[in-house]
Image 1 (tube, rainbow, N blue to C red):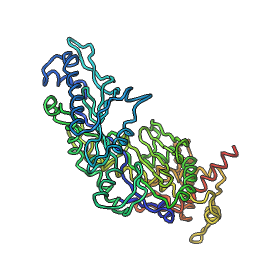
Image 2 (image 1 turned 120 degrees about the vertical axis):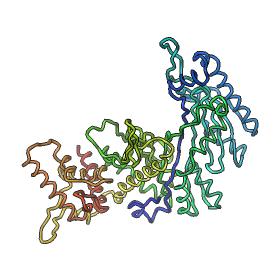
Image 3 (image 1 turned 45 degrees about the vertical axis):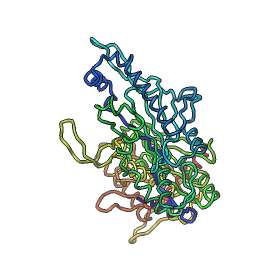
Length: 520
């Protein structure tokens, strides 16, 4: 899996290497007692006790047993167990990751437990409610003790396991793809330098990319279940009948890092990238970068947030519902484009789907959160990053080059026929160029009707008027085609924007929007 796009080709002289890999990944393990009716069945038919007895006595005993196990686990390996004051969330919360990193620095270890922290946090659990004849169990957010086990894994690097001490005993595992790559390169004696969660030097970027590509295909259910059983002794006896966890990807971040030859090289380009993204990336484009086609019935939220109050530079974040695309500079040397997937159902994958009537079919269906979908997270994250970089490849000189502008504005001849030029300062012509450049056309191309709907927002049912509009749009697309800005997709009636077209149209739109906004 290799990132190749016109952005890398264009700026090859100032980019040393690129690396695409997972950054933060959060897995969650759910036991089959995670819903109220499942918990009721477990208490009634497995434990065979009264529901109120479980909540008044047994649940508290199990919670204390988990804490006692954590204290003994830390003592066994000679590592600290801490109970900081204050709650684990909100104002004044302890910085658990910083605590673990400081422990690793002051009390180094090559492998195994680093330390355990017990904090109070509000988590999804259960409580008793009035029921018909006997108490019922309902979902609730209740403060409880939560255990954070920090490990240095031989393969995965620094990671932690978070365990709720009250039913349903949800287990969360945090890993980082950059730490995994670092650990594997150490074992292969490959030289590198890593600061925080980014590489600043790689002796062999090609080999590092091969290692990063293996992350999604690790035996994750086996790895995660092994850690869950280390931290939760209830799985050996009291919860033996529930048959283990169902593991899902709660959050997946996939980053593409581009290392520049110097801080000056990145600084000179980065401000123009931010300006271009802020001025020209419309909601439709952002949907396209995340692999979604815009539809009139889309009822989600698309936002662009620009943050300048960060060191060393600024960050721009585009969000579609709970999924994000971010661009920021890292350590003033790296340009990072990152796709964060929290809501995988917005992405489609070709898979088997079992329907309610019991039938099974193959097709393009929403991506699921199951841990087996991690390779799909990888492919969708990489594709989103590439589409974003592809759109940024138009950035170069802040004003359109004379030759490019002349190609767009002057008449062109082909096969003895003359095709008129475009006037980029006219609002209608700019509207056409924006429709052609729209982000939802990147993945699947555009049709005559797609452009028609943008140029003629008021629909008509008159066949003569429909034919007139279709012919008018066809002539406009042909004028772009003879200039090499559009190309026909073989065996279809759809068009795609060429690299040259994306560059010229992007420059023209950026300049038009900047100065039209100033004029207003």
